[in-house]
Length: 314
Image (tube, one colour):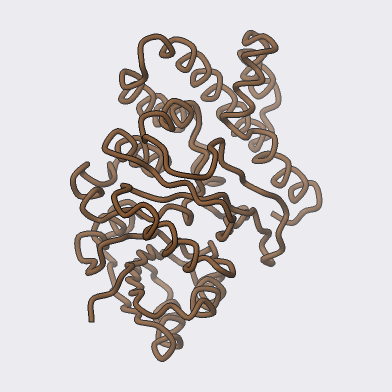
């Protein structure tokens, strides 16, 4: 029987969290969901064995990919090989929470023509404890994708386990740019938003795990590459913003790039660079700063990380 959803699970040295990730998915009773796990680990089969433990509880296929390490390439391959009409991305350290599949099916039924549905998420710690909310800067309901893109161009505010994407739309826009190891998902969402309507789900039914070995933590330590990747997405998609709002949103986006690079510098304890990088925020003025904070969700993205870091739990 054809599945209704294909969950792509790119794995690399993921044994620390993979079992918990798959257990949370299995708890949803995922009938009609196929899990495609692409594994480039050199771990003596540890991730393979974890996947095998779930073979009786879900439709799961473990595919060794030692030649293919980038998560972007594994995800694109998964979409190409998926059998379902809709795609979800489930990374080895993230979680589906209670009610996730019900919320997703309801969104598909309500807006079958949407290129994707998205929802808010939670931040969780290494132990799986909820430590904060990751809200969307969009109201629930069906929206023209181009309108959502006006805020998304400022900052990627979508947690990666949240979107469920129509497979034909993914393929039509060319999937992920595999050269963008840090911003490929953000750029994909902007391409999809240019292609059609987007359904925003109300409940937060996914969780994004914060830990020191995540790609967002380790990758952001390469300052020049991080800035280049952020600027690449802005340069590619700013022209799609209506002319009357393009300058304003572009200015906010440049401030967001500076802020992201400043936060990355702070994670390296380069405080001088971090403080200097936050100066563009002050130049926005009170109204601009309010728009910036609403679009970026900066405070709620930073505070859970800061609390965990200060407690030595990252």
